[in-house]
Length: 121
Image 1 (cartoon, helix red, strand yellow):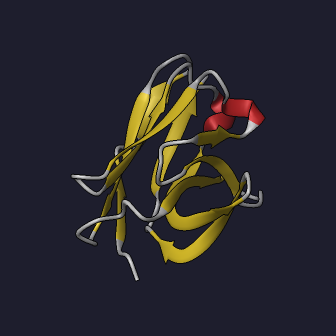
Image 2 (image 1 turned 60 degrees about the vertical axis):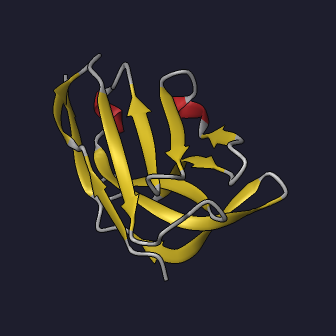
């Protein structure tokens, strides 16, 4: 199982930016699809963005045009660049190693501990 460690969260004002990183313990994650999830207090966890081994990406509608997921397979790291942040983006963000079936991302069993993102208005 891949060990995942997220970093880069913090407190930012609305309109600001943050870049989250997810470092994998495996020598390579190039064979895995990777996803970023978030969970706000009192809400269900939702998939925010996912990237295939080949670099194809998908996003939840609420972050399209603002968030960008990318991967560096040599560094075994996945990133989530978040721009134009809104208070409703406040959540704990976690990365996951999973897979795509067709155009749908499915989570696997490897999760990071999460990193808190707080956006003030």
